[in-house]
Image 1 (tube, rainbow, N blue to C red):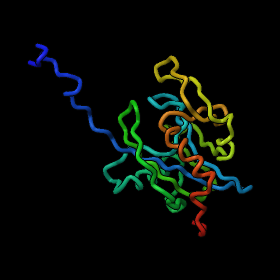
Image 2 (cartoon, helix red, strand yellow; image 1 turned 120 degrees about the horizontal axis):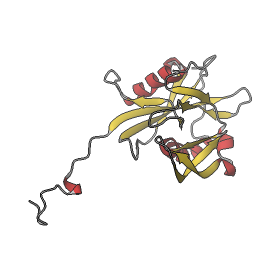
Image 3 (cartoon, rainbow, N blue to C red; image 1 turned 120 degrees about the vertical axis):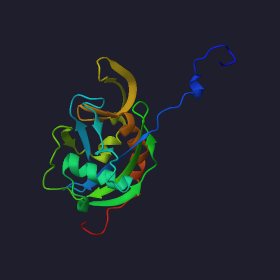
Image 4 (spheres, one colour; image 1 turned 30 degrees about the horizontal axis):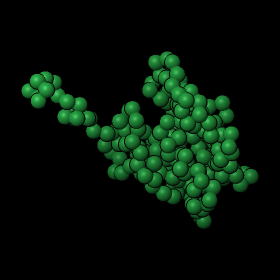
Length: 194
């Protein structure tokens, strides 16, 4: 029995479940005009992240030797990006999701775009390649409401407008501090052709 006479555990005494580890790849490329672009995916409808914009990635599997291998495996599975077309630029600080109890390990990678993206249709609805310069324009950073998986809306929440979609949540929290560093040229393109 606690000092208050109740036998129920206090919130501070309850154990929280451990975080599950995940990794994402933040692919960078230059288009035919030399513009720096990011590669993001729009998830298929349904599920807790249905319809959301995200970076290719997912949960760590037992066969993954490291979070980097998770990011590469997931990018290949989700958008058909072979690991040999990715040059690792940086491992960014891990980020905890606010509701799904994941610890996300983000990796920045320079990619050589495949002839076409090969989508894992059960998870990925489309691939988008927004220009970094457009994301840095004042009108791209917005506060908007977002749909909830079971109906209703949440917000206003910060995000980046990518066409008709909003990049928000954990992906926004990864991208927001990264954009000025990309604009400053902190990670130049690799000299080799991958």
